[in-house]
Each structure stands twice: as C-alpha cells, then as structure tokens.
Image (tube, rainbow, N blue to C red):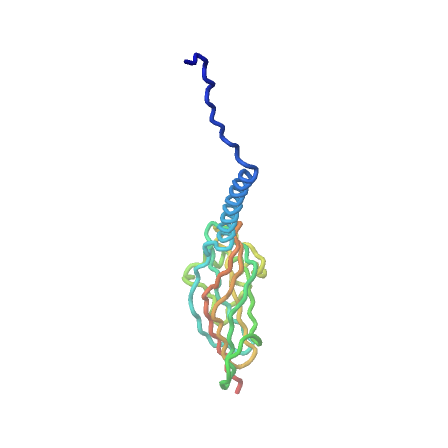
Length: 209
C-alpha cells in the first residue's frame, strides 16, 4: 500500500497557432472595411440625392414677332424655403419645328437666357397685381426687376421673397419652338443634385408677309 501523494493533474490547453490569430485579425479587419464602405456608399447616395427644392410646373403658349423674347417664371420667390441653393447650371430642353413643316430638330436658332431677378418692391406691392406679368406681351424686364444678373452660379438666399429666376426664350426664325423643361444642377447645403423643372413653353413665330 502506497502512502505517497500523487501529483496533481494539470490540463494543458494548447495556445492558438500564429496562423489562427492572423486569420481572426484578418476577418475582423475585413468586416471593418466592409462596414466603412457601406457607410461611405450611404453618405455618397445621400450627397447626390437631396430633396428637390423646386416645385414650379406649368405650360405657356404664346405668339411673338421674330426676335421678340418671351419671359416667364422658372423658380418662384421663396420656393426653395429655408435652404441656401446655388444654381450650378441650367440647360433647356428645346425642340424647333420650322415654318412650313419639316422635321423637328433641337437647338439654335433658339436663344434661352436665365436671369436672377431681384423684384422691385414697388412692383411686388402694387395694388391689383394678382399675377406675375411674365409671359405677357410687352413685358419690361427692367421695370419688373430692381436688378438682374445671370442665374447660373447665383445663390438663392434662405426665405427670400424677392428673388425670382426667370427665363427668356427668343426665336429668330419663323416656326415654332417647344421648350419641354429645364435641367438644373444645384447645390443645397452640402448636397448636390440634378432636377428637371417642368416649365413648358411653346413660342410661335409666323413668317412675314
């Protein structure tokens, strides 16, 4: 009979191999990179998809003499609300139908001009002015606006009720031009976007007799 004390049993747990530790680190790094890419993708989508600040939409058909411009509203005063909006670019969608028929074709000889108008307060407060005189024959831009400048590159201030973006359309040959809308590239705060303002204008110029 043995009276000696038996040695305590110790279980030895093998340590992870260097290859296993590296694999776990690489897996965690991959997950972190994927999460970062997803976050960047979401921010990029939000950056390029702001809520449009424009809601003007109507149609106007007029007849004018050759070379006489038609002025009409594109962005109404205060339409953009409390946002600061910079107009980075403005492009018309035009289609010209020559006098006497023929195929419709885009572009010249149609002139389209975009203007930022600071409305003259005396005009805005005039009694009986129930609607804008824009689109009316004989419209005087200098009488309606206290000042004007090119709309492209201009900034619409938050809450402004005196700033109006207007568009002038001039047809220099007999025929009919259809402006089917206006593409606007803009920046709203830190976001940038592109939108189509569906202001449609048809201008008819009859040939001289």
